[in-house]
Amino acid sequence: MHDHHPAATPSFEADVERMDATRQQAQELKRQIEWTLARAINPADVLPMLHKLARLAEDGSDENVFANLHLAELLVERRPWRAALCARRVLAQRPDDDRGWATLGLCQTLLGNYNFAVHAYHRALTGAPKNPWYAHNLGHLLDIALGRAAEAVAWLKRAHEGAPDSDEVAASYAHALARAGRIADARKVLVGVRATKRGSSREHLALLKWLDQGAPPDKDHPLPRPTALHAHTPGDAASPPVAPPTSKGDKADANGAPRGAAATAELEEVLARGLASLPLDAKQRARARALARDAGARFARATCPSASRPSPSRGAATSLSALAAGIAYAIVYVDHVPLTQAEVAACYRVSVASLRARFSELRAHLDLLPGDARYATFRQR
Image (cartoon, rainbow, N blue to C red; front, side):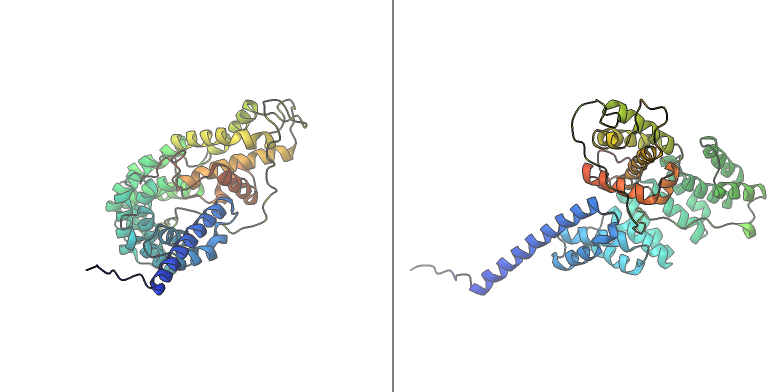
């Protein structure tokens, strides 16, 4: 006798082929989205592609999680309820994903569900305990939204230790200390940050005035709400792209612009001046200098004014500042620092459009991603 095994039916084989084709289509679409994100001036431009990928990809697949996580991060500011649904889909498949929990925490904050937002940030910190921005948003919620200043102090202290140069974190920490009755300690925090900077922000001056009055509850001025991990600004006209290099070597080009080491040194000098006004710590500034050196070979010689000219043209100097601003924002992007492109651009006195164009080119040239191991400081997975 012979064993007879039923042959696969034509319909079954067709179903398998369809599933394989769908899986390959989802993988290809994910690659297209990654390519577009690396080059898009406005990340929101990929929203239609992300929605399509979320529908196409199989539940639980890497492509499905990728689509829902990016949708949550891009939708959170304008549509927090929809963003929360996307974040929950991520967490249903990856229950320990810190980005998913942090984004859900921000969604719930914007929706006014503060207790659940606190829970979400606790879960995010379980996955990334050294991320100061998670600790900041948690402490900020406890202090401002729930009135639990004494509990908030410990989290904001952790955030301040992790990001000692951040004005925003220092202000939140000082505010919680004052509301917990520790006015002298609150003043020390503000004065300590002020001593490391050229001047004080309006917010710090207002807080100091409030502390001078004894931090009365009836004159308390509310601090800004917790911020997103990524700041996305509306797109506007971008400046022309930087031209790629046409030859090798450290000699000057036809316009007299320096190349190689001289160009990179000039770029780092401009970069350092702007970094002095940004709430980044020493490690992040070192990462910015490393990124500048990596990018300098291609970009610096196309933007640096001539070292041999005592008075470089205004256009060349602005172009160099725009590149430096793009590098600074690249660190903000990689390290999940809650700063907007406008805030970074202001430190270099360039337009947001110029910063965005340079940042887009840097992302494409260096294949930058959030938490990039080459440049990240706080990203803990």
